[in-house]
Length: 324
Ligand code: ATP
Ligand code: FE2
Image 1 (tube, rainbow, N blue to C red):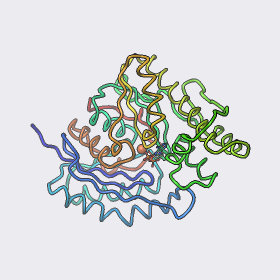
Image 2: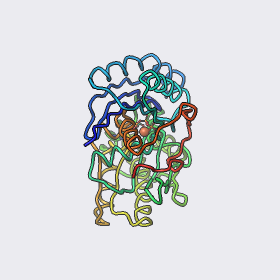
Image 3: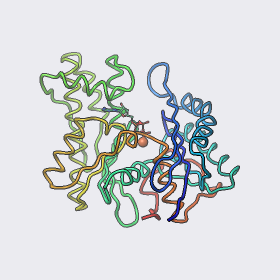
Image 4: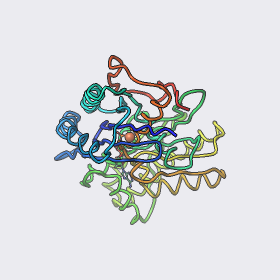
């Protein structure tokens, strides 16, 4: 049995994280989270945060890991350009100094692969819902295809933006979830599914307006019910279209109990399995980058320094899946 060990670096947005994994488990992980003084994320400030902490985060992870690593993996995209570049620079320097392969990975696919690793899902339709991203993905003919996605902002950013506008602190998603539990009624909010894609920005504006006339808990509840129903509808249609019999939830918004419940009902109705990884593997984490790096390394893949530039719009279906 081989014992490949890979160090992964994640830093597409708020979270800077390094982790070492082998084929069985996470050996070590260190995280440093950027917190803006006010408002939303400032890409250059976040990148500066990552630059300030990355040496320590790598050093601590290597120390905790206490073993040699075979390759260095990093998030090549999608994400915020300045953050991606900071982390990529560190990854190149580390791989060159240790004289080991460098592996650029797609962040969205890393969410799927860590879910497959840490649950019993084998070939799922994945609903990936985070701050910046909202996508429905499934494997077909050598690639993870995007069956549906947001036409504007991610569901997490929509929740955060709405929450900020009503004076709730960041991150807004968990606050909205708590307030929604006190709701008395549902208020209609625009439900926008176009083909297989969804849009959250009109819904967010409508919710902001609605707070002027309705109670905050009622609006939080209505926001969640509407937005989550859109996500579940598209996920269900992807299931029907692909004939797959598993759904996997990924991304930080996957922490939401109501979203899980709604997806769970849909899966139960269709008689298919629903998988939710442990919380630490749902939001952005270094382990998922290290693990996808491990799969790619095992398949003989590596990224030349000349091809290691970042891609803020890196799409999962750009990647040829060489490891399955
Ligand atoms: P990415 O770079 O992949 O877009 P991210 O930096 O936004 O990721 P994640 O940890 O995947 O990071 O997700 C964070 C988002 O999850 C935030 O928008 C936050 O409000 C949302 N979130 C966290 N917990 C909950 C919850 N219980 N309900 C709804 N949203 C939640
Ligand atoms: Fe993510």
